[in-house]
Every structure is written in C-alpha cells, then in structure tokens.
Length: 204
Image 1 (cartoon, rainbow, N blue to C red):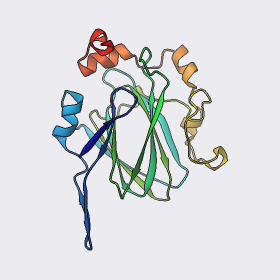
Image 2: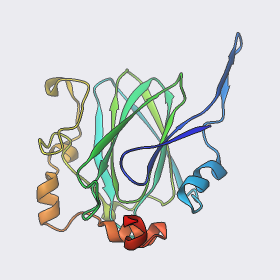
Image 3: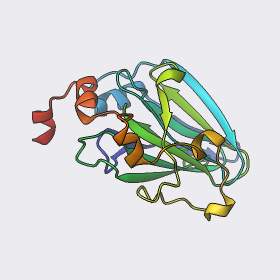
Image 4: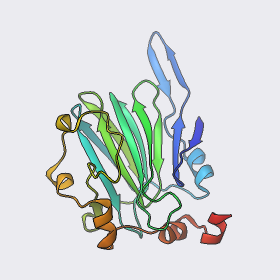
C-alpha cells in the first residue's frame, strides 16, 4: 500500500495494490499497521458508516469538536467521489487550507483525516457510496458543520453551484469566519495534544 501525506498535517492518501483478472479484483483497502505507523499511534475503530449519494450531492464541511474529535478513514465502495479535506484547527500552519483526494471503485484509494479536520464529500456519480471508519462514535452535540459554499474557503467543487445538492443543515451553516468568531472551531493545540505531539516538536 502506497501512502502519501497531504499538504494538511494529519491527513493522508492511501493507495492499495489492486489485483485484477477476468474474475474481478481484490485489494487490501485498510491495514491497521500501515495507518498506525504514519500516525505514530493506533487507530482504534469506534464506528463504521456508509453513505449513498446522487451525483452532485455535497456532504460537509463536517467536523467534530476537540476533544475527543473524530478521525476518519474513507473509501469509495461504489462509484466516484471527490473528498475534500479542510483544516479548521485555529493556530494550525495550514488553517483554512484545502486539499483533495479522488475516491472511486477502481483505484480503491482511501483518505485519512485526523481529529479536528473538516471533511467534504462530493458525489461525482449516481449511487456513489462512501464507507467511513471512525475512531469515535457519533456525538450529535459535538458534531458541527461549515457552509461548503463559503467563498473564503473557495472549495474546488466539481459542479456549478446550481447543480449541487446540499442538506438544509449545511445550507444554514455558518461561514468559516463566523464559526471562528463564535468559538466553534477546534484548535491546533488541542489536536497536538491528541496526536501526542508538542507545539515545539511540530514547529521543528
């Protein structure tokens, strides 16, 4: 399995070897030790989720408050999705930055998002099915969202705004600036404490 660190600290792309023949294909889409090695800590499974979306559906920008937050390992079980990672950790060297990973049922690529990062999924195909592995169970009181159409974020959405399908909750969500002003964002220091890294070590 090939691992690539994304531009946002704490996020990674995993690309497995896909073995294909006339019967179909096989791939190891998740390996505990591969993820633990890059994180420097174990990823303990707390919950698994599946979402199915029509083309143009946008889910996010979703995130969980720290602590404990919610780390995610996401793959496409069917179809194709654009996965967008957003750094929402106030004080992070990449605060407000965005990176992307293409997920589909051919490459079987996966993306990992550490605690405190924002997550957006955009379905490129009808019936696009995402599989999430999370290290914490869903806690509705600590799960929040940022409006994915916030011009400050300028997310690289693959469809015109008029063709996007958003939930009422995401449409009504605050902008990044509003969430920061209201104290609704995680911090870089909180993330480093969870990751077992000091601010000084992260800077070095």
